[in-house]
Amino acid sequence: MELNNIFERTRKASRSLSMLPSKTVDAVLREVAAAAVAHTAFLLSENEKDLDRMHPDDPKYDRLKLTKARIEGIAADISNVAGLMSPLNEVLLERELPNGLHLSKVRVPLGVVGVIYEARPNVTFDVFSLCLKTGNACLLKGGSDAAFSNEAIVYVIHQVLEKHGISKDIVALLPPDRAATEALLGAVGYVDVLIPRGSQQLIDFVRQHAKVPVIETGAGIVHTYFDETADLAKGKEIIHNAKTRRVSVCNALDCLLVHRSRLHDLAELTAPLAAAGVIIFADEPSFTVLQQSYPADLLKPASEEDFGTEFLSLKMALKTVDNLVEALDHIANYSSGHSEAIISESDAHINRFLQSVDAAAVYANASTAFTDGAQFGLGAEIGISTQKLHARGPMGLEELTSYKWLIKGNGQIRPA
Image 1 (cartoon, one colour):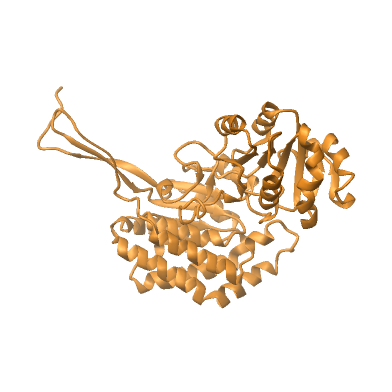
Image 2: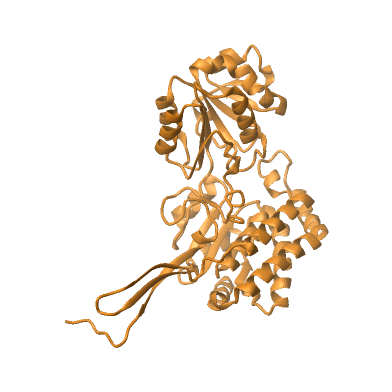
């Protein structure tokens, strides 16, 4: 089918979505969640076809991989979205003007949401569930790495939509080729907003070539600062979790900043990382200290390019700083604006860090692994925005809406 024909059908289907009863929307979402679990064997077999084409050492392999537990988690997220209050038609502002005109500002769908993403089949479920809940149709452009997985997921979704008499065109999966990407980038008049999810290279390409509005979901170059007042036990657990819980996700720790006065704690602080096989690229002061304790095959001298790298693997940079100001300056220079954290027992240092760091999510004494729509109570997320216009951080239901003004009168005209 010609791409513009797909775009036109999705655009047309989107116009009826905001009129779907909320009970129907929630029923569809719960049935899609149940269908995902019921079709686990089918989804895993199709996913295996994709996995067979990718080397297990590829950082994208873990993101691509579906498991029974992950499908159950995806289904739980979809059910959570069904249980959330819809933001549609929420009255954001209401007033009556002196001339008698009644004004109200209400939430409405964006319309058609296009998403370009790489080897992340879970995104297909996430985008559908959030878009349906907010009355948006979606055009999905997954990567060739996940082609079999995405086709299987959309097949499951379409079965449920057909059962409820809802047009399948509200969720369209585009071919996994470059031509479809270029067409989507230029789909003026069809797409209301485009959201890229994936590598910095993908995001940069979309930003540079899109002719439709883009909400940028940036790469996660994530720092944690271990302050001079930090609690060692807390720090050890937080750092280990932030780095190793799931290394291929954008909220994983990339650079640990350590106050110079705490270098003597590095051996204990990094012991769990050594056990997990984390390669550390350490600056000179920390390298000298870690040579006495950290496995030699996992310890490397840091180069400048190691700072500001999103590793997406069992690798981490380590930087020594003399004070909080130096830590803040380092983060300002290298951060992607995703998630940053401080481990400290000083209220003054914590407050300054929270106020000064310019990122979508800023933590004190907690793992950056929590930067996630489901963890934030949003049900799921369509991405984590690192920009500052309209949406920032995990993008849930509200971020997939706009608003319009409704004006009711009784014959008022504006004087010349």
